[in-house]
Length: 168
Image (tube, rainbow, N blue to C red; front, side, top):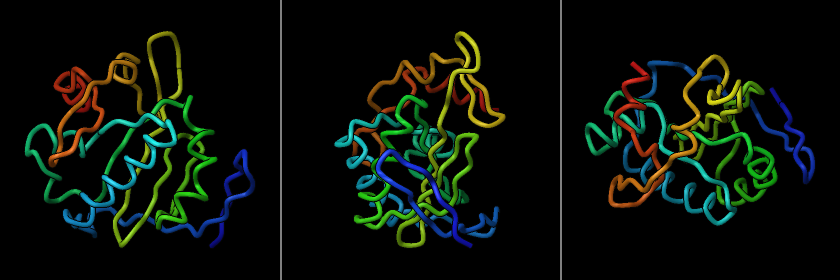
Protein backbone atom coordinates (compact mmCIF):
# COMPACT_ATOMS: atom_id res chain seq x y z
CA UNK A 1 0.00 0.00 0.00
CA UNK A 2 1.48 3.36 -1.07
CA UNK A 3 1.44 6.43 1.19
CA UNK A 4 2.85 9.91 0.80
CA UNK A 5 4.47 12.64 2.84
CA UNK A 6 4.27 16.20 1.56
CA UNK A 7 7.75 17.66 1.99
CA UNK A 8 9.18 21.11 1.26
CA UNK A 9 10.89 19.60 -1.81
CA UNK A 10 8.02 17.51 -3.19
CA UNK A 11 5.80 14.53 -2.56
CA UNK A 12 7.62 11.55 -1.05
CA UNK A 13 5.88 8.23 -1.75
CA UNK A 14 6.62 5.11 0.27
CA UNK A 15 5.25 1.64 0.90
CA UNK A 16 3.84 1.09 4.38
CA UNK A 17 5.40 -1.82 6.28
CA UNK A 18 3.44 -2.94 9.37
CA UNK A 19 5.29 -3.49 12.62
CA UNK A 20 4.90 -6.94 14.12
CA UNK A 21 5.82 -6.36 17.76
CA UNK A 22 7.71 -9.21 19.36
CA UNK A 23 8.38 -11.02 16.08
CA UNK A 24 11.69 -9.50 15.01
CA UNK A 25 14.94 -9.43 16.98
CA UNK A 26 17.47 -6.69 16.27
CA UNK A 27 20.56 -7.57 14.26
CA UNK A 28 23.14 -5.68 16.28
CA UNK A 29 25.85 -5.58 13.61
CA UNK A 30 23.59 -4.17 10.90
CA UNK A 31 21.88 -1.82 13.37
CA UNK A 32 25.20 -0.42 14.59
CA UNK A 33 26.25 0.31 11.01
CA UNK A 34 22.84 1.80 10.15
CA UNK A 35 22.86 4.02 13.23
CA UNK A 36 26.32 5.36 12.42
CA UNK A 37 25.44 6.15 8.80
CA UNK A 38 22.00 7.57 9.64
CA UNK A 39 23.26 9.71 12.53
CA UNK A 40 26.21 11.11 10.55
CA UNK A 41 23.85 11.96 7.68
CA UNK A 42 21.49 13.83 10.01
CA UNK A 43 24.37 15.73 11.62
CA UNK A 44 25.54 16.80 8.14
CA UNK A 45 21.99 17.99 7.41
CA UNK A 46 21.99 19.92 10.72
CA UNK A 47 19.22 17.74 12.17
CA UNK A 48 19.72 17.12 15.88
CA UNK A 49 18.58 13.71 17.16
CA UNK A 50 19.28 11.87 20.39
CA UNK A 51 19.29 8.29 21.67
CA UNK A 52 15.83 7.49 23.03
CA UNK A 53 13.70 4.79 24.63
CA UNK A 54 15.10 1.23 24.32
CA UNK A 55 18.22 2.35 22.50
CA UNK A 56 19.09 4.77 25.32
CA UNK A 57 18.30 2.09 27.90
CA UNK A 58 20.56 -0.42 26.17
CA UNK A 59 23.32 2.17 25.74
CA UNK A 60 23.24 3.12 29.43
CA UNK A 61 22.59 -0.28 31.01
CA UNK A 62 24.20 -2.80 28.66
CA UNK A 63 26.50 -0.63 26.54
CA UNK A 64 24.87 -2.36 23.56
CA UNK A 65 21.50 -2.78 21.93
CA UNK A 66 19.08 -4.73 24.11
CA UNK A 67 19.03 -8.36 22.95
CA UNK A 68 15.24 -8.57 22.63
CA UNK A 69 14.75 -5.10 21.10
CA UNK A 70 13.43 -4.76 17.57
CA UNK A 71 14.75 -1.41 16.36
CA UNK A 72 16.73 1.75 17.01
CA UNK A 73 14.94 4.60 18.78
CA UNK A 74 15.88 8.23 18.29
CA UNK A 75 14.16 11.41 19.42
CA UNK A 76 14.14 14.93 18.04
CA UNK A 77 12.43 18.27 18.39
CA UNK A 78 9.61 19.18 16.00
CA UNK A 79 11.70 22.19 14.94
CA UNK A 80 13.74 19.76 12.77
CA UNK A 81 10.76 17.98 11.19
CA UNK A 82 10.65 19.93 7.90
CA UNK A 83 14.42 19.66 7.56
CA UNK A 84 14.09 15.89 8.00
CA UNK A 85 11.29 15.76 5.43
CA UNK A 86 13.45 17.71 2.99
CA UNK A 87 16.17 15.08 3.45
CA UNK A 88 13.94 12.04 2.79
CA UNK A 89 14.95 11.78 -0.88
CA UNK A 90 18.67 11.94 0.05
CA UNK A 91 18.12 9.30 2.74
CA UNK A 92 16.54 7.08 0.09
CA UNK A 93 19.66 7.51 -2.07
CA UNK A 94 21.81 6.06 0.74
CA UNK A 95 19.41 3.16 1.33
CA UNK A 96 17.09 4.38 4.09
CA UNK A 97 13.46 4.05 3.09
CA UNK A 98 10.49 5.40 5.04
CA UNK A 99 8.28 2.46 5.98
CA UNK A 100 5.88 4.04 8.50
CA UNK A 101 4.80 7.58 9.32
CA UNK A 102 2.31 8.80 11.87
CA UNK A 103 1.51 12.53 11.81
CA UNK A 104 1.34 12.44 15.60
CA UNK A 105 5.12 12.25 15.58
CA UNK A 106 6.74 8.95 14.61
CA UNK A 107 8.57 8.16 11.39
CA UNK A 108 10.28 4.82 10.74
CA UNK A 109 13.04 3.99 8.30
CA UNK A 110 14.31 0.63 7.10
CA UNK A 111 17.64 -0.43 5.66
CA UNK A 112 18.99 -3.96 5.27
CA UNK A 113 16.07 -5.43 7.25
CA UNK A 114 16.58 -3.22 10.30
CA UNK A 115 14.51 -0.27 11.50
CA UNK A 116 15.09 3.19 12.95
CA UNK A 117 12.21 5.02 14.61
CA UNK A 118 12.37 8.78 15.16
CA UNK A 119 10.01 10.21 17.76
CA UNK A 120 9.30 13.85 16.96
CA UNK A 121 8.45 15.87 20.07
CA UNK A 122 6.46 19.10 19.87
CA UNK A 123 5.53 21.53 22.61
CA UNK A 124 2.37 20.56 24.50
CA UNK A 125 2.59 23.35 27.06
CA UNK A 126 5.32 25.40 28.67
CA UNK A 127 8.04 22.99 29.76
CA UNK A 128 6.29 19.85 28.46
CA UNK A 129 6.72 18.13 25.06
CA UNK A 130 4.71 15.34 23.48
CA UNK A 131 4.96 12.74 20.76
CA UNK A 132 1.65 11.00 20.20
CA UNK A 133 0.52 10.14 23.71
CA UNK A 134 4.03 10.23 25.17
CA UNK A 135 4.84 13.31 27.24
CA UNK A 136 8.02 14.37 29.00
CA UNK A 137 9.65 17.46 30.45
CA UNK A 138 11.16 19.63 27.73
CA UNK A 139 14.50 19.66 29.56
CA UNK A 140 15.24 16.13 28.29
CA UNK A 141 14.83 17.40 24.73
CA UNK A 142 16.76 20.63 25.21
CA UNK A 143 19.59 19.55 27.49
CA UNK A 144 21.50 17.03 25.40
CA UNK A 145 25.10 15.94 25.90
CA UNK A 146 27.57 13.66 24.12
CA UNK A 147 27.21 9.97 25.04
CA UNK A 148 29.57 7.28 23.74
CA UNK A 149 27.70 4.24 22.47
CA UNK A 150 29.40 1.35 20.69
CA UNK A 151 32.55 3.41 20.20
CA UNK A 152 30.82 6.44 18.66
CA UNK A 153 29.61 9.68 20.15
CA UNK A 154 25.88 10.44 19.94
CA UNK A 155 23.66 12.93 21.68
CA UNK A 156 21.58 11.79 24.66
CA UNK A 157 19.65 13.52 27.43
CA UNK A 158 22.30 14.93 29.79
CA UNK A 159 20.38 13.48 32.75
CA UNK A 160 19.73 10.18 31.00
CA UNK A 161 19.19 8.29 34.29
CA UNK A 162 16.26 10.59 35.13
CA UNK A 163 15.01 10.26 31.55
CA UNK A 164 15.09 6.46 31.81
CA UNK A 165 13.40 6.55 35.24
CA UNK A 166 10.60 8.60 33.66
CA UNK A 167 10.04 5.83 31.10
CA UNK A 168 9.39 3.19 33.77
